[in-house]
Image (cartoon, rainbow over the protein chains, first blue to last red):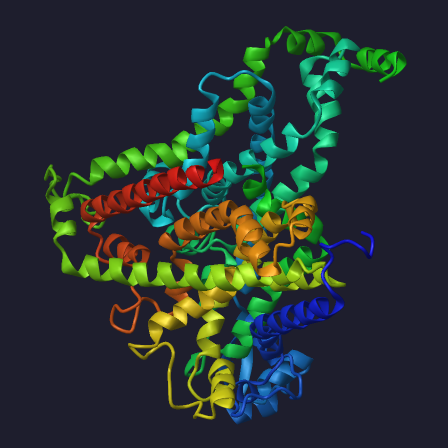
Length: 312
Length: 315
């Protein structure tokens, strides 16, 4: 853009805009920074007044997150001195580690269900989006609207029959059940996003492939799929983030076996209420991957969020 | 595409597989591709919805599987529409919807406008602002209860610092007057970036040439803003409002973790109320009718809104 352009904002305007946006960003990031900081505080530092910005970092929160502990007598501790660093942390409070907590399992469940449902919804979504983009399908617009409208339902509204249905089919509190459920919820987004991406790939590519003797099927996976790879990847991230963050279905339909991390993290209890450093440690482990992902893949993600808006 | 590549591929493809796939007509492939998606949506969305409709006419209770189930006709619907408690939750939901959308539109649009001044490094700051909306509302909502603690909470501390009051003098979550605003603040914090991104897409879709033409006509910056920027962004903004409206009407995870509907039932939004009826009181038939009423409300409001949106776009 040339310096004569009338649409280029003045330098003063730019500095003012930058100042305001950066100020907002800092305020909005404070709670997130506070989560990360609290994870490294000792329980007494976490609830200090005034709130401590400078503190001595400790891994207590993380140790408490991953373990269950029981109180022991001083004599017992004297006879069995703590050997590892995490046992020593716990021993300060007259406790010994009784075993691992359930956080590891819950986190693993989140990973299994998140990736499983993402794979399925992107796989099915790509196929459906390709067909919607390229073929004459009777009632196409109605079907597409139907797919979109499934997203308007409050999760609690369908949770009752799904609860009953899963109980009948033996799917309640299983990975398979949750994967199917999240896939169904994500499919509407996945079909709509992917249809947008595939619509942008010129038909000529496939047509020339067909003329060259490819079958329809080959043209799909040798020509269209590689072209749509970026779109597929960003759709996958959206599906993954949804499944990763979902709470309502998880809390209603799972309990022991297949529960994911979001319903678990708020239930981490210490002495006299929530153990905030442990909660914050769990939240950090759970949230930071998403933050890093978002920053690294910002170009594709930001495009995806506004995709629906821009297309219409 | 060169012939040789295709030929080598054709050779590499086993003849039988190739012929069976080639044998499929376009129509067959189309249905093969769309079929699984439709089937899954029917099984996990539509079938449960129909089941909910059926249950809504009965007095069935999940926790009493052996009790007689009888048809009660429209009695569940009558009871819900005449229940003053439900109108209270509707009011709480309306308050929440109105103010979250109001703040998100005002702040989101302002931020988008500022970012569109194209200062250096704006895309990195945009990404940082977007972070809250990518995170799990339940986990973040739970942590906000810590920020909201009287005295030790960071939020209370900062408010007291700015206003000169006492950090221990107020509790956002347990005060009847403040709790409705506590949930509005967190939702606004979390979802303003969404409105901002959509506004930004709208602002970026306005061609520079329009402003250049206006400049030639000596239109003031203020006039350009009201006659070009606002009308051109309006369809985008309305779409953002639609998405936020639907999402916040369904709001559950964030608020349930923040206030749990309390104190009393001041912040008990419809989804939280519905969850209580369905999964704590186990009034399955009754809550099914409730769910249907909510779904019809969202669907109805959204359809009316989309009509209005299309009118705006046609202009």
